Amino acid sequence: MTSTNTRETQIVADPDVPLVRITREFDAPREKVFRAHTDPALVVQWQGPNGIESRIDHYDCRTGGSYRYVHVQGGEEHGFHGCFHEVRSPELIVQTFTYEGFPDGVALEKLVLEELPGGRTRLTATSLVDSFEGRDGFLASGMESGVRQGYQRLDALLAG
Image (cartoon, rainbow, N blue to C red; front, side, top):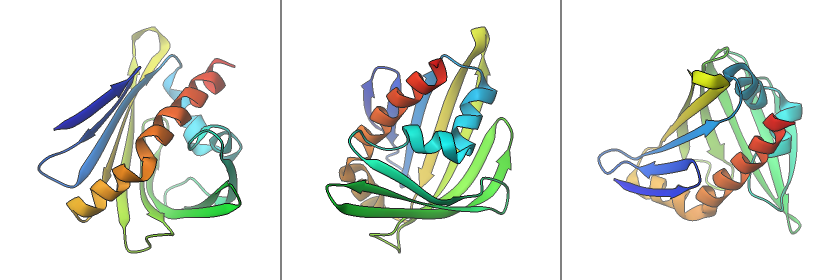
């Protein structure tokens, strides 16, 4: 397995299936971390790399709902969309994820929130794509730094 670690964020590319696994612990209760992933007013404050502006077109985070958001940087817009297949408060979100720049590359994502002692939460997110090339392209796109930077902003949001 390929693994990189910065602070508490661990990003692992599975060698056997085209999957990326992200593990991160937060100093906040599971309900608060879940809300930060499901409330569009909060999602827009932390998601994505530093230096981007986020705009949410719609974000209906419920079983059967859908979403679309746009990241704007340097005059360029990058759209993302998907469907929520299962949303179970406060522990699970299963969704699809598509970067509109590569519309055939749909990922199936699962986010699990585990309650830890001391009011902490462990997030485990998996993204499964249809090929190793797709997965490696996903990693090469700067996803790793965007995830780490976003989670640092999420830390600050959860602490506030």
